[in-house]
Each structure stands twice: as structure tokens, then as C-alpha cells.
Image (cartoon, rainbow, N blue to C red; front, side):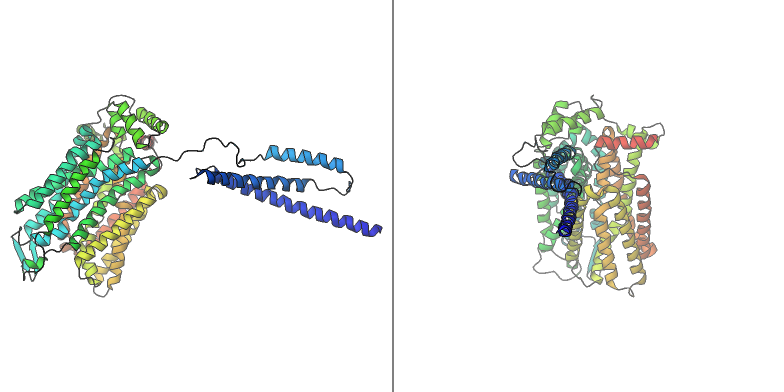
Length: 599
């Protein structure tokens, strides 16, 4: 009996110890699980019911942890046996008290007062305003893409100086009409500084870009001679130049920090959508082929298809002015003009009526502008900052970054890739060049849309570095393809084409415009953005006019090798000189350049 009772006590103590160890393990695990759930419950939820369930579950796990802790610390010891009940109760009380003091419930149970939950940022108005402003960028893309589906219906009818090679028609006047849009863009970009500072960012869209678009498109639709078409094309370019300054600046100055990258990239997304739409309309709308001027008349073709495309452009231009009138003005511009009350009202609208949030942002704007009337820097001030050592270095550094990135964008070879896309697709078995152009632009739209999603997650620098690296690899591959053709299979060039367009769309397409609006200081933003945009369109004009000569001189293989070298050099520059602006207020970005200059 004694040995059986002793064995029973040993088995009892062993079981109690095992139970205590298990309970202690559960206690730690459940407490950690409770802490994790508690962090989730602190986030804002979409309904009171879900908040109640999220609040209840961690509390229940914490209660389980209390019981486990009690089991782990209150097992009877061998010396006391099972008879010291009073002493056990005291230890239970002391242990429970210690537990609740050291590990209180982080999340209350359902029904207890949790205090106010954090409110979700109201960004719907800011997103809608960015979309409204991006309509200007959509017309920008529509202008650039218009020549592709329109030239076949113009050559031989409006442009009469036709040169035939077999059934292929060419016209020097048509080439001039197509490329002279760059001259108009340069004029618009140059005037953009005064327009943005005098009329405001919103005013530039309503009173300048919209009317220029609508009037020039109507003139194009009614034109019957080459001179009228060329004049209208220059005016359209001027509208594009103004929009290419105004739209990115407006979006950057009105977007919340958490969405500024995505909304800024939406500017380039709208451009690609505009090009895609005009390609798609041209694909769906029957039009004469270029063989019309040098071969038999194509029956069933609509001779005036390009006129209807121009009328669509006129409608979009009018819509830009109408939509722009509904947008609030940039609070940054208003504050720098000394109109603090108007800036506060604009911020309240942009932040969905959140007065506290608007007041906090307004205070930062007031600090950045020293609370006074500031008309901004003049053209001569910005020129002095750029070219003279006595100029403002806080303007020079970001302006140089914006300009170098713009140069990389144009000399990276994107125009060459688009130019040769028809040849590459044709070698892969796609004879319909209209369909090929629409497919290329469709890929660009999708990839640019993905960049909008990544911009505020991955950051500007990683996307830009990855973009330039991918483009360098793709351009080098296309150089190899053209050097080894016809031994090299067409799928190599087709794959390189897709990689190049996707890489460009993820980084080098949208980010230069976004960086331009982000890194330039507010006091010089209008003039400096105009200078960077002017450089962009000047480079575009140079590439357009010299690309054919470059290909004739060093062959396509050599041209693509040059573009690959430009991408590699641009990647190195970004690594050294371009800062990350993700998550920073515009005033903080400006301070970042000041701090880098002082280091």
C-alpha cells in the first residue's frame, strides 16, 4: 500500500509537472498570438461588426493565457503534498495578480470602450482631380499618335508631293507635318513657365491647353491643304507642351504623399492610353492604305477617316476645359501667391473635407513659403542658378537631375524601338502594321498601369534602375538580332521588343515627369519644370530628325548598341545622383537637396 501510494504521488507530480509545462508553452504562444491579433485589430476596419469580432478574439486568447499561466505556476510541490490548500490559494492569488500587472489585456473584450478608431485617409477627391487633370495628358498622347492612322489617308490627297517606290508612297511634306509637332511642343513648354505662374496650374489647363487643343483639332478636321494642316499641328504641339508642364506639376502639388507616386505615374498612363485610343480608332475606322497614291484605288476605304479622328480630338480638348473648371487650384500655387484662405479651402476639398489634415498640410506650406507673398523665381533667376556658380545651388542640383533624366528618356531609343516595331512584328509573321502598332501600345498601357501600382511601394530609384537595366539588355539584344539577321530567329527580336517596352513603361516612361514635379523647389517649379520640358522636346526633335541618318550611317545594329550604352550610363547616373522621394512631402524633398549640398 505504501509503495503503491508513493508511486501514485510520483505519477501525480509528474502529470502535474507535464501539465504545467504544456500550459506554460501555451501561455507564451497564445500571448504572442494575442499580441499579433491585437496589432491587426488596431487597424481601421470596414464595419463595426468586424471591429467587434477583431476586438473579441485577442481578448479570449489573453484569457486563455491567464489560465495557462495560473496552471504553470500553481502546481503543488512534493513537500506540501495535496493538503496545503490554503497556501495554494494564496499562491494562486499572488500569481494571477502578477500576471495581470505584467501582461494586461492589450485589446478589450467586445462591448468595452476602445476609444476612437483611426480614420482612413479620404483620398477619393484627390484621385478624381488627378484623373481630371490627366485628361490633358490623354489628349497629349492622342496628338502624338494621330499621324500613324492618318497619314495613309492624307498622302496623295492633301500631301501631293508623292514619291513612289513600288506601291509604297512617301512625302517630304507629310514627314514635315508629322515631326513639326515637336517644334510646337518646344514653344508650349517655353511658354509654360509664364502660363503656370500667371494663370495657375488649373488655369493653364482651362484657359490655354483646352482651347488650343479644341481649336487646332477643328482646324485639322476642316483642312484641305498642307499649309493649314502644318499650322494646326504646330498649335496642337503648343497645347502638348503646356500640358506636359502643367499636368505633372498639378498632380504633384495636389496629391497626398501616400499616393503621389501612383497619381504622378498616371500622367504617363494617360499619354499611353491616348496613343492607344487613336491607334485603335484607326484600326477600327476604315482608311486608305499608302498604296492608294501609287497603286490602284482601294475600294471601300473611307477617304475622310482622319477627319473624324480629328473631331474626336476636338471633343477631348473641349472636355479638358470643362473638367478643369471643376478642379480646385493647386494649394501650393495659391499659398505662394499669398492667398492662404483659398489654399486652405482647396486643401479641404482635396482631402475630402478633413479640416485637421488640411490644416496640418497648410501649416507645412506656410513654413515652406515663409508665410509671405512669393511670385516665384524668374527665367533669368533660374538660368543664373543653372549656369552660374553665384546662382541658387538649391535650384541647380534638382534641375540638373530632372534634365539628365529627361535626356536619358529621349536618347534611350524608345522612338527607334517604336519605329522598328513594325519591321520586327512583320518578321515574326504579323503583316498588319496597324494591328501591330495597337498591340505594342496595348502592352505599354498595361505595363504603365502596373508602374502606377508599384511607384509608392517599390520607390522611384529601384524602378528607374531596373527600367534602365532592362532596356539596356533589350537594346543590346536587338543590336545582336540586326547584326546576325537572317541567321537570328525573329522570336529573339520579338522578345527583346516586349522586354524593352515593358521596362520603359515601368520606369523611364513615367518617372522623369514625376521626378520633375517632385524635386524642383516650389519657388522655381514653374520656370524650372518648363526648362526641363523644353529640353525633353528638343531632344525628341533631334532624335526624330537624326535617327534615319544614324541608321544609314551605322546600321540598325550600331544604333541599338548606342541606345544600350545610353541606358547603361543613365543607370549609373541614377545610382549616384538621384535621391529616393517616396513618402516625402514636397517640402521635405526640397530640404533633402539642401542637406545633400551641405554634406
